[in-house]
Length: 292
Image 1 (cartoon, one colour):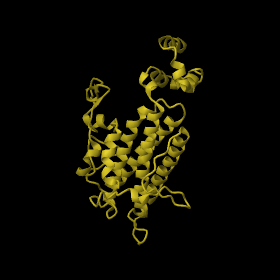
Image 2 (tube, rainbow, N blue to C red):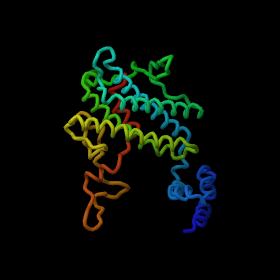
Image 3 (spheres, one colour):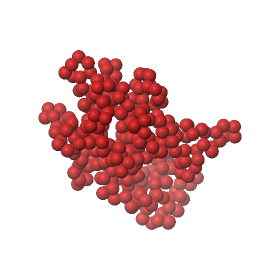
Image 4 (cartoon, rainbow, N blue to C red):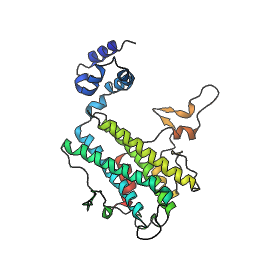
C-alpha cells in the first residue's frame, strides 16, 4: 500500500486538511518511523472525520470542566470515606483495603491537578465546587459542604462498608461512561490533552475493577466481574447507572450475529465488550441527589 499516494488523494479531496489537523500533519510527514506507521490507521480515520473540524475550544473546555467536576465528586467520596472512623478504633474501610482506596484517592487528586492546569492556560476558569476550601498545608481539594453522598440519608454508606462499596462501584462505572461521552469533543485537541484524558479514563476503569473485585471477595450477591455485565447493578435502586449497558448493537451491527461458522457471540459477552457512553445530561441527573 502506497501511503504517500493516499495522502495526495486526501489533499486533493480537501486541500486544507493538513492545516486543519496540524498535529497529524507533523505525524504524517514522518511516516518512515515504525511508531508513525502504527498510528496511520487512526490518523487517516481522523482526517476523514469532518465532525472533528467543527469542534471548538468552547466544547473542549466544556468537556474538561465537566470531567473536572466529576473528579472532584469522586475525590471527595473517597477522601470522606477514608476519614470516616478516624475518631474511633474502627475505620469504615478495613485495613486490608485501605491502601487500594488511598491509591484511588491519589489518582483522583492527580486528575484534578492535571485538569485544572490544562484548563487555566486555555483562558477559562476551572470548575470549583461550591463552598470550596483547600487545606492550607496540603492543598487537598477537600470540599465536604458541596456533597452529600448519603443522598439525604437514603444511602447509609458511612455506616456500612458494603453499602459504600455498592455506591462507589456505581459511581466508578458511571465515570467510565461519562469519559466515553466526552471523548468526541476532545478529538480536535492539538496537544497531549486527548492522550491524557484517554489514559485517565482507563484509570477510572481500573478503579471500577478494583471495587468490583473487593465486592466479589466479600461475597456480593450479584457476583460482579471486573467489568459491567448486561445492565446488572449492585442494588436495584442503582439500576439507572446501568441503563443501556445491555446494548448489543455497535455501529449498526448486532454483535450477537457474529460467528466463525461454529460459534456465536452471546448477549452477555456482547454487552461486556463495550461501555455505553453517557451524556452530560445523563450524568448530571445521576449525581444530582448527592449534591447540596
